[in-house]
Length: 288
Image (cartoon, rainbow, N blue to C red; front, side, top):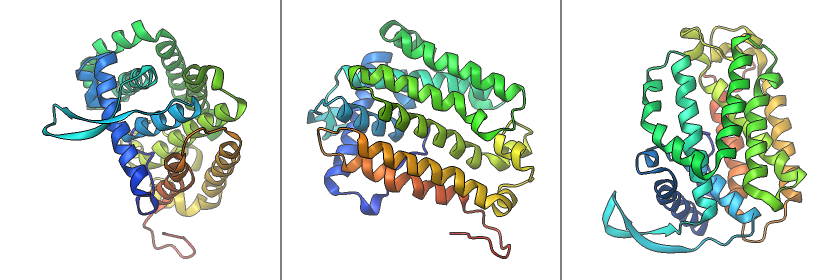
């Protein structure tokens, strides 16, 4: 997950925005503690969301206190204290970053060269949580195989990423894992894969890289693909949103879950609408 999971900020309570930032800063320190200082550069707010979700489902309260960091040495900032769960999520973040960059390298993307920057962090993550590396590397191999075979079935192409998130949730939640938590994380993984394919549609077509939506729809641009296949795309995403809502209602949260509700129920659909804004002027096409 790299930059797609975001809150609907105008509808985010101040207390939850402060919590979000504290989790982000705390996770940065936890990545350093678990995987080394270099790995901290890979942090995204996506994983701060995962931290909030996993802590809450595991019924682990977050201890927030003001501390300084390397980027903010003069003013103390609220930070979530480092704990076992945040170190685990930091390891997941580092391993995901490494294998994402390996995928970029395989696609001929220059960013792939930076994978070496996270190799030491990967080794440290493996020493702490070898299951995380096994899950991510295994599912990434499955993803690469499907892409190499030119899979044109959208649900099939999403499966390795969705299954990766499901398996990671089982490992991270332990005894608190249920069929509904597995289903929620599966949906999140599938959504991230689809969002990434939609976002990279034009770039992948131009560089002749694999993109399941481009192969399935056949249009040469995202604008055309959205205009011609809006109904199918709406069905794909609306089905995911409906399942996320249903799963969320059945998950037992011990603490306030306004932050994660905002992101799942409002932020993710909002980001989807943004990605589907094709910008075309075709009659009958919805551009909002």
